[in-house]
Image (cartoon, rainbow, N blue to C red):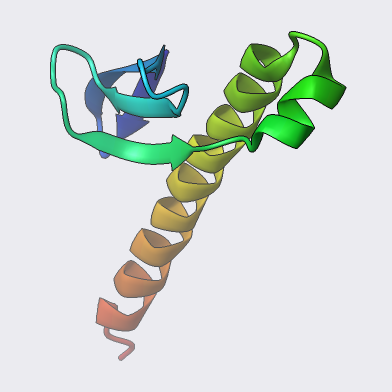
Length: 84
């Protein structure tokens, strides 16, 4: 997965840890940016589809953060404009 912000490209990876948590982190780094932990009861109901659910949730989170960053950048740019 590739994430772009301000013309910078960051490679991200979704990983299932030994603890059964799912994380998004920058490729090659250990520190997670986002974490999802699914309880055992819900895992049983998902019948092996927890990887799909976690991936969709983490991708949605990344997209949201990307959009929020773009909105914030646009707000900052509009505040810095001077009208004559």
